[in-house]
Image (tube, rainbow, N blue to C red; front, side, top):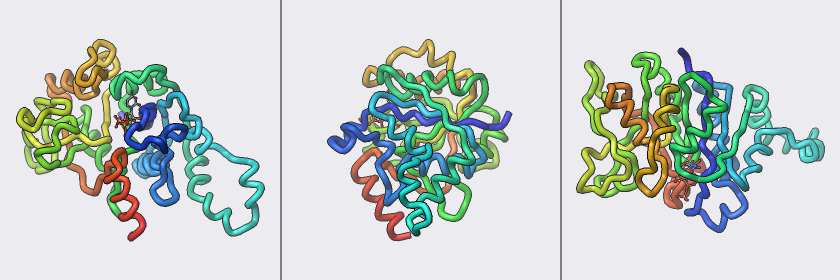
Length: 274
Ligand code: UTP
């Protein structure tokens, strides 16, 4: 089955960006002029996906307005040179459908993904965390690369990158064996959410891109709160990994952790200097 839908969990509070995120969704913070979530939607479109499913929460209505027409504004700038600035977003809106559901209580990423089940149904799907901004300048984007991996292995795929050994406590960390003939794909046999460096089996960290098979929803339904009292996607993926149903993929390209101030500034400088 091909991947037709992309889920964007976007209900988190974004506390690291307070006060900016008090009334503005973190996903709407711009890298130059483009909000983080628009970068994510463009990556999904490049991968051949046009059905966007967004899990929002209280205070996130700006996301819905962004992927809609703004009659008053568009009428104001009609026929003047500023109209060009809306070309990209207009083209995205015309290509895609956007549907939304709300996570009522922020019980973690795993819970946000389970909340999205109503928009996804019984099919494999992509997940993009918009605060991880990925780019592979002029070459295949990360999601597109992952769909190729999914098409070959037909199981869940997590994107990984090597992180400094003292930073494992910020990520889901995987352990696995390289699959035959590849130096960038691991069959995962262990995953730990945010381990202390001394307990981390490797320094291979899961970043905010996943392809998930739909059995993940039933697993999430019975997953207890884990690290930080939140329902963790890593714990649910571990259940699939026990049956050899997860591969980890070292993607080509760059990732910016735009959920942190340092990563946000780094991404801004990178795109400014392109
Ligand atoms: P983070 O933990 O990085 O985001 O969640 P956060 O909680 O918004 O940010 P800080 O730490 O307070 O600054 C990773 C992703 O999962 C989503 C977030 O929106 C983000 O895209 N998420 C997290 C949810 O949708 N719901 C949750 O309950 C938790």
